Length: 111
View 1 (cartoon, rainbow, N blue to C red):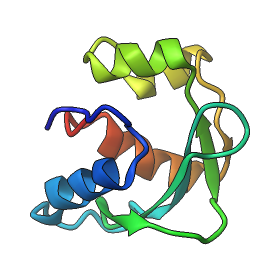
View 2 (cartoon, rainbow, N blue to C red; view 1 turned 60 degrees about the vertical axis):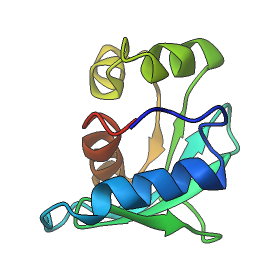
View 3 (cartoon, helix red, strand yellow; view 1 turned 180 degrees about the vertical axis):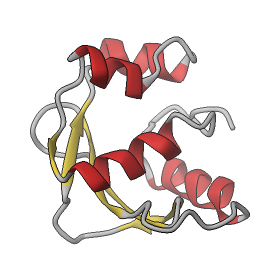
View 4 (tube, one colour; view 1 turned 180 degrees about the horizontal axis):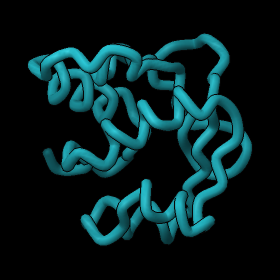
């Protein structure tokens, strides 16, 4: 799946929902994940069993801030968010369980 021009748009979320819909369920891989630039998420993704269910207006359990440079690298396939997190280059705040759910999906080649 190619990353759309606005990676946090409704179109992007729809592509993630479609791309993960056919996946086998991964029990426990769930959470509400805010992602975007800075401390305010551009979108909050609701995830369950390793699938993106869509965007939600509910409060995020984890926030993953991605700089514009990191976003460009990630969309080009040059940045693995899990590795960046382990190196301390990305500093999420909140629930570790929701973070792991997000990293599993976002690093699975769906972007």
